Image (cartoon, rainbow, N blue to C red; front, side, top):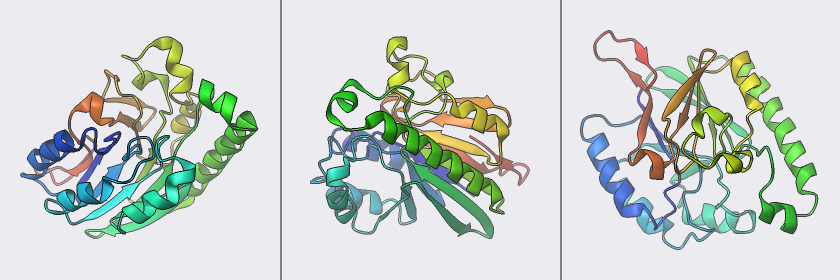
Amino acid sequence: MMVLASSDIHVPRFSTDFLASFSTTVKENQPAILLLAGDIVNKGDPSSLGSFLDELKKMYTGRVIACQGNEEYEEKFDDIRAASRNMIEWLVNEIGVYDVLGSRLVVLGTKGALERPTYWQRTHVNDMWKIRSTQIQTIKSKLNELRSVQAEYKIVLSHYSPTRATMLGEREKMWPEMGYPDFEDEIRTGGFNIWVHGHIHRGAIEFVTIGDVKVYNVAFPARKKPIWVLRLSLLDCGVEQG
C-alpha cells in the first residue's frame, strides 16, 4: 500500500516544480493512490488543469483523490470538475472506499473548517458563521461515520489544518484563519490512522502525532515534494506511516 499526498499546487503556479518533484519521487515506487488536499487550481481558474493532468498521466495512471480547497471556488467548482477530465475523484464531505492491492482503504474528503472565517468571508458571504458551524457539525458526523467503517486503513483528507501544531512557521495571528484546532479532540478519539491536510504554505512541520494519529501538512510550497503518508515497509513487510 503506497499512498502519496500533496496540495496547494495552484496550477499553473507550481505545476513545473510539482511535476519535476513527482517524477523523481515515483521513479523508485509508484503510488497506489495519489491524494491532493485542495488548492489544485489557482484562484478558481481551471484553464490550465487539463494540460497539467495530461503531464501527470504520463508518469502516473492510478487513482487521484482530492478534496476541495479554498481556491476551488464554489461558483467555479462545476467548471473545475469538468476540467478534471474524470481523472480526479473529488470527495466533498464524502467518504470513498477503495480496494487497493487486497487491502481496504477508506478516505474522508472535506475542505475542513476555520476557527475564524477570513475577513473576505466575513464581509462577502452571508451567514458565514452559520455556514461554518454547519460545516463543523457535518465533519464531526462524517468522522463518526468513518469510524464505523471496517477497513485496514482510514485517512481523513482536508484542506484546512485540524491542529495548530502544523501551523508553526506561519504568522501566529493568522492561525485562526488556517484551520480548526478543536478537531484535535476528534483526532484523539481516533478511529482512523492518518489526517492529511494542506493550506499551510510556510508550515515548518511535516507531521505531528496526536494520540495514535499522524497529522501531515503536505502543502507543496512547504514540502517542495509530494509526501508518502502510507507505505509498505520492504524490510519487514509491515506498514509504515510516512
